[in-house]
Length: 456
Image 1 (cartoon, rainbow, N blue to C red):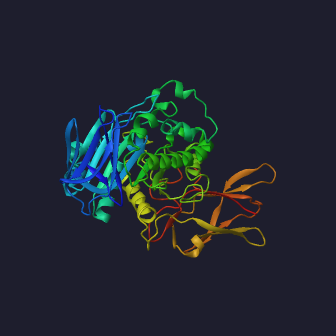
Image 2: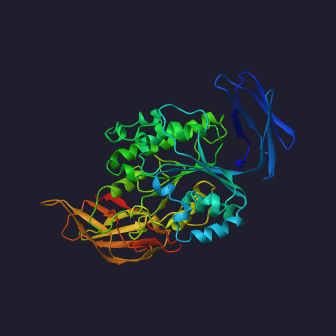
Image 3: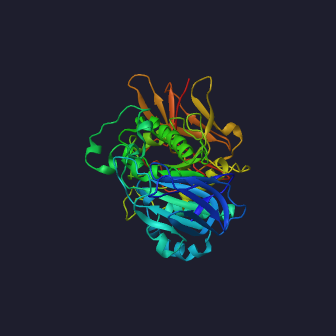
């Protein structure tokens, strides 16, 4: 297993003897003790040893001794969400290569909770699909592909242990993963769907699959979810930031302040689902709400978050359904790049796609110039398609905007005869073919996210 490195970390367990004292030692050296409380839980906060390990940790009480062997200290990441996070390594196109490569990552460890939908909080982890294990063909077979690839690539870069804790359930809405406290911050959604399945009921997955982890010290979390909320995308703009804030507070409190109260939280902006470029609702609006309708992260409503844009990764030939793209390597690479900047504070590279910094109409109101990143990030234009303008005169309509020219820092749209009052980009469920949206970072190859912006 992997425990969180750093100044302090938490270790905890349960005992049948309330009031008993539990002593914790690492390789024979005492590091702390705790009393079993009325809920049969004990918890010790200690300073991790300087090396990565492996170590043996022992818990001794009047009832006996339990040992954990081959324990490493590194960064622990929680991987959560619905089916695209649950998507197994075995479903990757190159799964055989991943199985062979697994032996090269002995410092990455895997843990996978089983599904647990309950109507009251579980104080300890229930059924486990995969106990802590080294990566191998056996342990990876039913493990999250994105979680594995994210941890593998992080380990390659950081060169110290990574612990991956998988807790997800396909087809589930954000309400199920949110505590009652988080849900109270937003208008109540319809509960019609929730009545059919336990896994859809508000807070039932939080109670069974997040709450039991809260005492664990973690580095951060990654999230791939939203498909099941695409029918009510506007509400997601409240629910998602509320859930993130609540998870942070509760992990911090339950871990006795050893998990940061603003731990880094990464997520995947939804990939395309259906072929065709006519659909403008559902996933399109949900992507916007994933950023709290700001368009990029981190932002003032979603601090210390990071994102992988996936709108240019359609996989309509996927044997697992068009909603399940197999391009998890691309998503992991983009997510890791953002994590290195936001979670690990590394600098000197572009970690997100280009985003507009200004919108300027010429005096004749025939051309709209969109500048990206204050001219600091060179852009690459791969197609002229993707921009639309809203024309309010007469019967208001959205129409395609022709890109009349572009530079390495801006694009110019023809808006003549429109009286444009809004512009949007990539505002489709499936906005482009694979790797062929309009705007990318020239050096990073990262796609620009969707935009929706008023023009004054």
